[in-house]
Amino acid sequence: MKLELLPYRSYRGVKHDDPLRFYFVPVIGTLYRQRVELCLAECKGGARVLEVGFGSGVTFLNLNNMYKEIHGLDLDASIADVHQVFRAKGIETSLLNGSVTDMPYPDNYFDTILLISILEHLKPNELNQAFSEIHRVLKPGGQAVYGVPIERKFMVFMFYLLGFNIRQHHFSSEIDVLDAANRFLKKVKVFQMRGLLPIFPKIYEIGHFLKSDK
Image 1 (cartoon, helix red, strand yellow):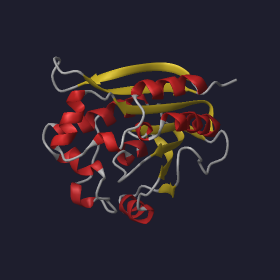
Image 2: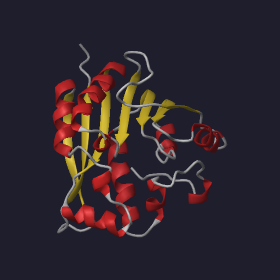
Image 3: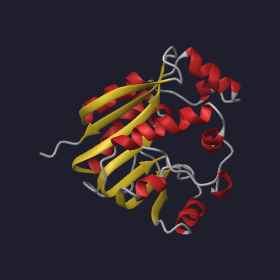
Image 4: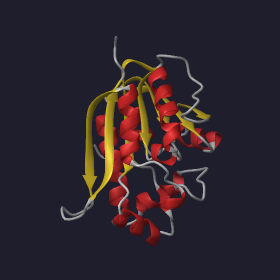
C-alpha cells in the first residue's frame, strides 16, 4: 500500500517536533513512509478507525478509502487546523485531544485502532493501562495495529544526524510493547522492517493483534 500524502505546505497546525518534514526528505523519507505503509497494510477496513497520535493526519487520505469514519486522538495536535485541512478535501474527521491511557470513547466502539510510533513514548508501567483501554474500546473481533522503533545504535545515530535525541523521548522498547499487547489481545502477527538495504539491521516492528470476539 502506497502512502498518500498532501503537498507538504498543505498541512496545518504542525508542531516544531512533528516528524512531518521527515516524510519529504531523501532516504529518511523513504523509511518514514515505509513504516506507515506497513502498518496501513495490516488495517482491514470497516466502520470506525481510531488513530492514536494522528499528528498532522498523514494517514487520513488512506484511511478515508478504508473506513466510513475516521477518529483521532492526540495529546496536543491542533484539532481545528487538522480538521480544516481534510474537510477542505472532502474528508470528515472526528478529532480529540487526549491520552491512550484514558480514552474518551465508549466500550466496543472501534473496528481498528492504529498507533504508529506512539507506544514507545510511554513508560513500561503505563503500557498495561494503554492496552487495557485499547481492549475496552475495540469491538469484539476488532484489531489493534501498532508500529514501534527497534532501538539500535544505528537508529540513535540517524536521529542524531537529524537533530533529534530519541533517548529523551523513547521510554519503552519493542519488547516492552509486545509483552503488554500479549497480556490483553490475541496476536495475529509481529514482524520487522529493515533499513533500505538488506545488510542494514531491523529498525521497526509492526504488531497486529485482535480482541477476542467471545
